[in-house]
Image (cartoon, rainbow, N blue to C red; front, side):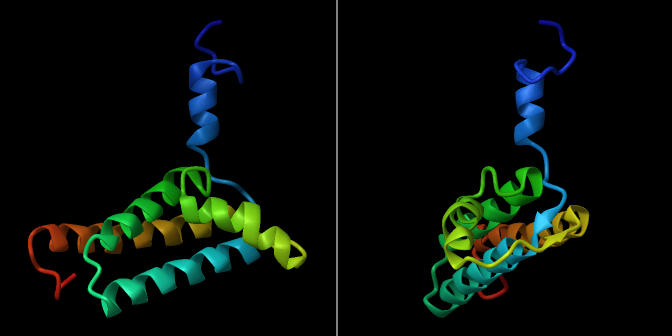
Length: 122
């Protein structure tokens, strides 16, 4: 096999992993957002400094791969959304990826501040 990026090649498989879905199911996207909100509130309320790593990882994983490498994304798309029985609502993927990118900026900043000992600022 050449380096043409066919499905069976390593570049083809990497491209499949590091792709963002378009369109995106709005129902799943909102459920993931709700899950992130719950994790953030719990992190702040209970002083779970270690959880900033989990939150930052989730945002980075979702911006790079959509739900593919995100545990929360997998839980929502494979378990929660199908059990709700709600019809899919397809929406454009790029705005959702942009929103995840904003989440990366904030969560990685919080992670760095936490690592430097500025938990209150984080």
